[in-house]
Image 1 (cartoon, rainbow, N blue to C red):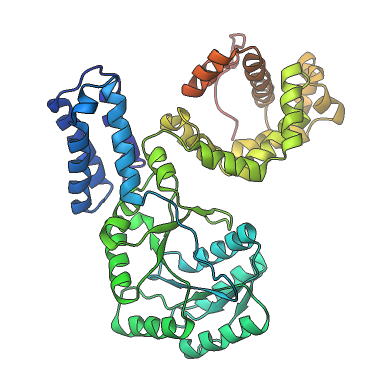
Image 2 (image 1 turned 90 degrees about the vertical axis):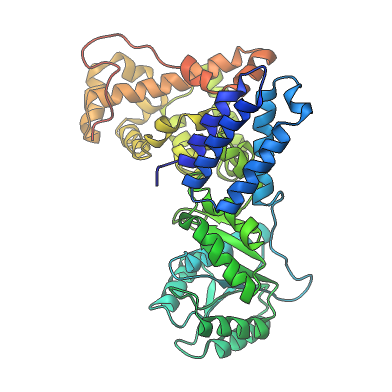
Length: 469
């Protein structure tokens, strides 16, 4: 599958009409052709594609838009609203019991990331709701499924109730009693996963549902399987009755096929999105934010939420002040790197920011390992050098010593110096802006990247190349 094909093709179709002051039916038809192709390439269900494009065309050809101011931008808004509608309009959280035990039953095929999603869901509930969580290992068919859940439980400090390879119905019954006796708030049940849906598995799930009377039945579906995910979701929903879906292996906006098909085909709302291996890469699914990401509008709200969790407010304010008054040093740069790493990969962070999400080639080529190389260089400095960058600027011998200590070259040290200078220039530029200029920058953040580039003297080996591998 072509990387970002859905997002990039939809954005291309939108760009062709955004700047036009007048639109006719031919313009809309050409855009719809691109939209249709991009959705089909992303493996969105054909019926969903047909309805999606029909709804957009009908609204876009309406008198209000065709005769309004800047019709191109209004059509982009129409596409955004339709994307949001297809994926569910509003985010939906877990339906917790008002009192007593909340029981969540997870279902899904093997390979859908069910067991890992359970671990992430447990961490999410404990963190967001401050509830005491327990897992029940009732997937007795998949090799090492119980061991995997126990390992995850130990990793995140959540107790796993297990009885080995026994009847899943008895395990669930005993596990629920244990949870009540030990005053747990939430129980998440890991049920049978198979390579395909069969009658025996479905009957077991129906029996467990009857025993547990779950508040939620969450289906894990692999986002990379496109419209097949929607077909699987419909089959499970028809026989067991799922209350929501967890979309796994969803990295950014690269695979919209499943996200755009599941709700329309199966009627199941997408409740959570999971990506990556880390236990904190799990979030409530927001249809409006996903629509913005797909169209390259960024996702500022998610960015702010992640920043609030990862960044200490007082420390950030102190750094901003040091940047503004020119005293920002290598100790501060090191703190900044650590903050960024806590938020996730730099390419993911840039994808959240409007304007920068369009620079796909640049963001995809950013190597997070470069942060570690910069950290190594800073660690090779003396405390005095970290505190006073001018010491390094004035001495080539210091630069050579630092490079040698880090196993790198003097050119690598110079690139680190440029990074520090770039940070200072960006902050100085922003501190001198008036309100109007700040508004313009917020509409086009890519200007900041262009304006803040550090000029270096031309010469052999200066200002060129990548970090040394």
